Image (cartoon, rainbow, N blue to C red; front, side, top):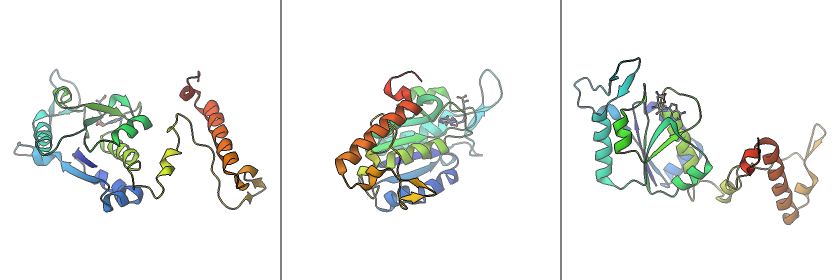
Length: 227
Ligand code: SAH
């Protein structure tokens, strides 16, 4: 898989890709992540990428020229499964979107700044708009890094044990069951007996029951119940 990220602040994106599963996936060529500095595509002599809003009002808007230039350039090189704009008014990101995106061969992610991008870019190129929640951040880099993390950890070979991602929360619309490790007793709190039984079927059943119980208690909306 290849992910192209268009950004004004690539330095904000560096550390999430420099450690742990994401770094390993890049080192092992499971994914190629390429940052594109939007300013490099500006034809303005001061490399500007923003301008004041038509109609007036506070806040600058990212202009069409450099964005269209970088997107046209990338599109001329390969076909993209999705061209994503990170935006608070986009579809709320979730595991199901991460699962779908993880099957794409190439995706492009555009990070906004200031008041956002000229809307005509959204109309012309963007195939998916993703929000990470109902709050506003100052730029699209942190949201883009979150989306990339959620996608990359699903790619075959990215995690030590590929089945691990399948048992995480949301994969079956259930929250994950509780997990424990050694010691079996700590400050009088014992690990549930069944987990020490070595009985695979009983353990599976217990985990499933716990997942349903936790989901009912904490996120009934996932089960289609009122919250
Ligand atoms: N004026 C816009 C907010 C711009 S915030 C509005 O009111 O909708 C600047 C940039 O940060 C956005 O272009 C977007 O790329 C990014 N961003 C901010 N909050 C975000 C969120 N919740 N999800 C995804 N991207 C977000």
